Length: 170
Image (cartoon, rainbow, N blue to C red; front, side, top):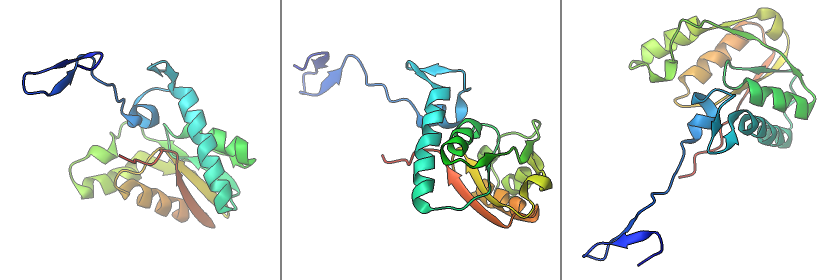
């Protein structure tokens, strides 16, 4: 028998202490920045995501004038990316707090309409600029496509989108 496990009569090993696999979206999206999960600060994890994203963006040689987060949970990572790359950070979207989470809405048409109601771009932060948008994750792409279109409609000269979420591997 393995240490910390029991063996059933058919030879199957059953662990007495199940392994713990936290969902990465707790760190990326769901948890508040002041949370501590399994002894790890969510804020510190998001700073690290911003650092890692900055390294990937630097390798791509993206020439941006401004870094703009997609509110709210990408702010910490976007701020760290901005600092690491020496690119100005600006708040370019104002979030309507009364529109729910768009990625869980049942209908595609609802998700599409809700993104435009959820975020309002400030044209002064986009006009004539090469904008690097930082989002926390890309689930379906509906939100990302709408946000890119909104940045272009607000006058951005070029729009780049980067996701600070680590890639899902398993």
